[in-house]
Structures are given as structure tokens and as C-alpha cells.
Image 1 (cartoon, helix red, strand yellow):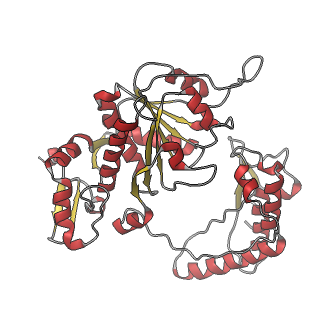
Image 2 (cartoon, rainbow, N blue to C red; image 1 turned 180 degrees about the vertical axis):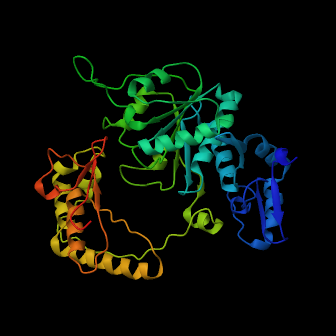
Image 3 (cartoon, one colour; image 1 turned 180 degrees about the horizontal axis):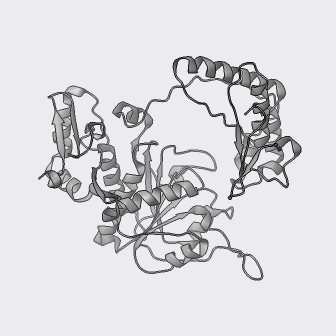
Length: 421
């Protein structure tokens, strides 16, 4: 008889949580906001905040209609419901869409600043479901745009799981497929990576500019990780191409790390931040594990300042042939600096694993510096098992990057297993 239960509330008078009846207790959560911008952290007020925040008639009916959905996991139906930050963030996004969608508005629907691990994919799916139902949106097409293939596939699979919420979902695997899907008049949900808005190589020459694919105004682009690849409207990059292809589309950005710089300003591109759920709040809610770190700095032995030159580098520019990048790479990979960093890393790792067993990952700025760090670590006494994993080109790599143990993979990249690994 509980199949029809919509919201389950458990409380001991102080701690008060809500969730789905068939969920484990770890998925139950407090409701900490009455209006979306306020936060109530005191445990003794949790019951009052939940009752006055979730159960007013208008809020409750909205939650029941739009914020509960079901996922199909290999035939097992799992019921899920939004948490308070998802409810208020999505509600504000819907209000912003009504006010700012083209042609009445400027098409900048705003930024949802929700930290990593807070359920952005669920928020995007719920928002998609609401917008597709709204008569004033006139059966919109929702384009979900990401900047990496792994994120594209992951987000697409999450949407497919909750198809009762978002409807039929299509995936553009090629540039031609994307152009065909966007050239139709119907609504729907389309997934793509931003690099598919590339210029095509035609029979005789390359396209000089991206063609217009749709002039519809009921086309909404949701950009995941909106702080990346969304800038440079006049530099001929993907951000310019997507706006040439969809001149009357409206844009909303989802990100856990908005940026504000001279040539990269998330709010300037997407509009003001309409809801924030930062890492501090996520940690306090138990949605994200706390991050502990020791701030350390090993200065680069370099006199010139390259801030301006680095800012002007295009994201897809060949780093290996860039003089600024090469200078910084050499400074970062200086023998005395690498030796110092390697000793510090190994000392820290050995002390850490005395109390907590685990592994470590070291990320370097270039493949050459990866090898330098590997050599420096393996020269130290009691260095544990270690390996370098990098992309490579067997025909072009210099001998310093070669190895006697190379496992070729079908995608052309390979693992370098160096001596003693």
C-alpha cells in the first residue's frame, strides 16, 4: 500500500528528515529552507522548517506534480524525490525561463551554482520535465550540452533512467546527426558535446562559418559544467558556432565552479546566478564529503610573468608548440624542483598510509613532466609501486617517453609501464 506514498517524514522531535518510503536512511535529508534563499541550520528547528517549507499547499502540490520521479533500473522501479536545494533551484530556474526566454527576454536564463555531487543531473532532468510541460514554452527542444564524451554519456544515461520525467531522449553521435536533429520543428531532448558544433570539411574547402540550424525561439540550451568552453564569441570557437547555429536559443548554465575573469565570465554569458548551493552547505548537509588539504607552494624559478599570455591561449591550441607553455613547463620540471616535490609527496604518502591504507594520484602539467616525476620518485628509497598513464603517439614520441612495456589500446592511447612499476 506504500507504492502511492509520496513523501515520508521521520522525526524524533528534533532531527527531521524526508525521503521516499523504500529508500535507505542515508538518502533521507532535512528541508532547510522556507523560501529558497534562507537557510536554517539549527536542529531544533528542523521539524518546523520542513512543515513550513515543504507543506504549504502551493509548494506541496508543485512538489507532488513535478519533483517526484521514477527510474527504471533493469526492471526495478526506484522512486526518487528532490531535496530542498534542488526544489528551490529548479523553481527559480523555471521563473527565470518564463521571464527571460527569447524573444521577450535576452535569452540568458541564469546560472545554477550547485557544487559537485549535489545531484545536478537530477536537477537538470526535473527542470527539463517541467519546461517541456509548460504551455508557454510551446513544446520546446531542450539541448543538453556538455564538453566531454564521458560526461555526455553519463548524463545521457541518467536522463534515460528517468524517461517518465523527460520523455524520449536522443543522442547526437556525430556532427551530421546533431545538425539533422536541430533542423526539425518538433520538441524533445537532445544530448551532444559542444565540439560537434565544429566547422565541416566540405568537398572543396572548409566551412567559413557555422550554418544556421534553427531560428526557433523555443529552443533551450542547458550547459553542463558551464564555466568551461563557453567563452570567446568572436574568436571562431565552439561558443561562437553554437550561437550562430541557434541564433534565437536561450541558455542556462549549471556549474559547481563559476568563473569571473576578463575573458571568461560565467554570469556574463548565462545571466546572474539564480540559486547557489555551495560546497560548505553541501558538506553541512552530508551531500558531499569534506575536503581536507594542506596548502603548499613550490615556486617556479621563472622571472617573466605570463598571466596575460596564458589567458589569451585558446583552449584547443597546441600546447607543445606554444612558447609560453614551454617556458612554464621547463620551470615546473626543473630538476631541483621536481626532486623537492617528489620527496615531499613520498613523505606525505608514507605518513598517510600508516593510518589509512590507500593509493595516490599525481597530476602533472605535461607528459614530459610526468616522466620526470616518475624518475625522481623511483630514485627515492622505499618508493612504492608506481606507474605512469598517459596518451601518446608511438611514431612521434621521443626516446625519453618510450618504454619497453607498452600496452596498445584500441583508442590509440596507451599505458606506459616504466621499469620497477
